[in-house]
Image (cartoon, rainbow, N blue to C red):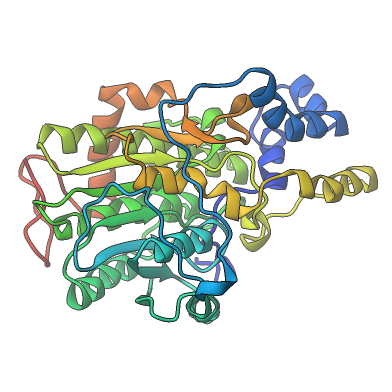
Length: 397
């Protein structure tokens, strides 16, 4: 059964991010501490304080985009580029209609990219497109329908993109859902797993052949701090035996996503590909992923009052998307890197190298997860004997 009301294509949420521990089996003492207002106050101010008191020398240059000057109609040049200039640089951003996806798309348009918005809600996507084109009326910005929880929609998106463009420079896998009740798609996959992991896995495999062989390309997988508390039982990744918890399902999908990113980087390197795979997370950010995914949790009046007043201290998506832009365009970024805020516990701060979960470094886990994902999606790539029905020949070593 599918839930028609679930539609979320932005990533990270300040409020829901703080609730994760209350839903994922962390011991009661930690849950109690994190429910206190002082914890939220500490989380909000620790980033800037830590950067002031403990300055962190980052080997990467921070990616910033100044406010658009009104005098030039919203056009701005930015020298922070790595991908070589071509006649038309083409990017795909999933979940481009809201939150991080919207702001990432906005900045890519300023960089001169033609952007394809992969969105499930076409009405919302069209509204977002109209707003973006008001700032950049000459931009090439198109929408192709994409529901990552539906395998046929993923395949149709790939076919439509191939027919319209036929080549790709940058893929940003951003769309996600969070905290929905136990729901399975028509293929029987739990909805977090299908939307946040299996769908993007299949999409990446189907689009990989369209990266130009002689041009550098990037695949940016947007993650979440929630992967740190996730568990990844490969023998029950689809929630057939475990007691289902919505936030635990979200955490699991994000941990699988990071393990996939590292395994993808290893396989691309083994093939001497000009394409690199990079991860990024926004830290502690004020977006609407929880609300738009249908996630709710009762709150006492004091907690609600405090959270309402904390919003001004937590970065919005226009700032929180900076690690994504660093991953996409940063000159110093290499295959397998992970970008995030450089402040305390990576909650907020200037973009910098982020910590990768130790499980993602385990090559055996990566191989097993990859094989399982190929079997579940039917999309085989970067593996021996890979064959994917339809489209161009799959990328293999």
